[in-house]
Image (cartoon, rainbow, N blue to C red; front, side):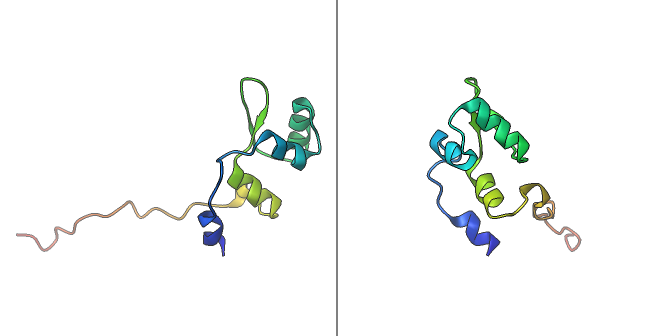
Length: 87
């Protein structure tokens, strides 16, 4: 089920300003930033001070999944040749 979430096509990697407005219920960027901070959202601000939120992060957060608790699969270090039988 989780893997299917990552296969959903994304229109953009980040939320559009109107989507941030819908989520936060605030139209002014300063109010949006305040709401996001108060509700524990991770975001960046662009040069204009607008909050930038990753689309996948928002999907997880809105689904009730804490993205901070997710871990990446353990790395096996990649493929390595086995020279133990080479002469």
